Length: 395
Image 1 (cartoon, rainbow, N blue to C red):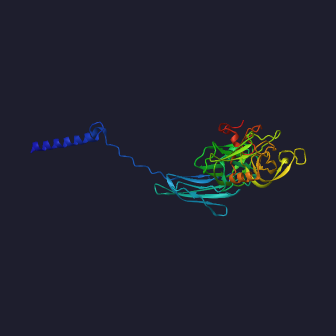
Image 2 (cartoon, rainbow, N blue to C red):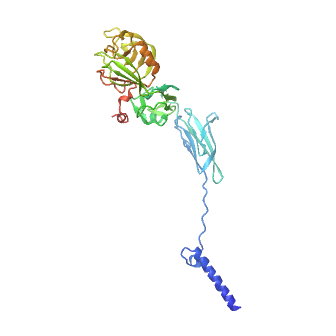
Image 3 (cartoon, helix red, strand yellow):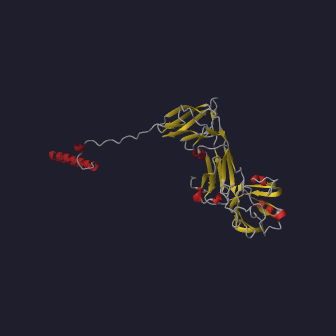
């Protein structure tokens, strides 16, 4: 009995030793190391809510977005009330972590923003803030676009944003502008004056590209105490690639569509003393029934070399008065010699055919005219600058 009991005790000790060895990193007995620490319980953070603008803000620009963000939780309800107590609608993100209103607030008004969010701990948190927008400014600046909603344009189309007054904060103005393309197209803005900024692609547009240009300037500071008056936007589509090359030596105009030559027509361009500037023009506008007036470039019609001549079809290529237009009086010279005051003369039938084919943003390149180089700022002649020059800031 005694031996059996002793043997039993020995067995128990051996088992305990084996168990201790399995659970100790060093193999030392448990009693020498102390009890193993218990795993710490995971900490559940409460939801936190951040609002923009911050509560108490008193100089908020009406055009800047109002937003709410939830961290470690989701938003269940967000309400923005105007001074009349009406709810201003916003947009809640699909994942419930953010909310935004960006349609523009009123000037000199106080708004109340209330947000309710729930964290992983299941506890709701309510955040309430108030802020006030700036008083109505004494000066607002309007904006216009050269693109019109729904139109189809050429592959050379620049996107031109023109402000009604000088912009003193160009960076602020550019932040209010957005160009979205499908497919994605590389491009950049360049200021051509204190009132005009132009976006052009690095290379000619790809036919079929969808383009959205947005000038969301309402209520945004543009410098010098001025704010944007109202937003402008346009959605356009790039059509076929139409390129015209007019040669002053051969007196021929070659028309290509999607890089395939479709027609060659006789033309007559600027005579000596009125030579047509050489370079790549972009079609700006089309006119049926137009009066060509030398007074537009500083030569009154009733002086030597002046004129006022009605033409049936005319397409503007520059601000300085270069058009391609119907000129039935010069048909005998078309294809043979240059006799115009700088424009590209065509027969009435050929002008109508080309005008029916072409559109804003198409390209017309003049070569061998003997004229000076076309200025990049004359009309929409943005392709006169290389991409490197376009993206180099002006000195």
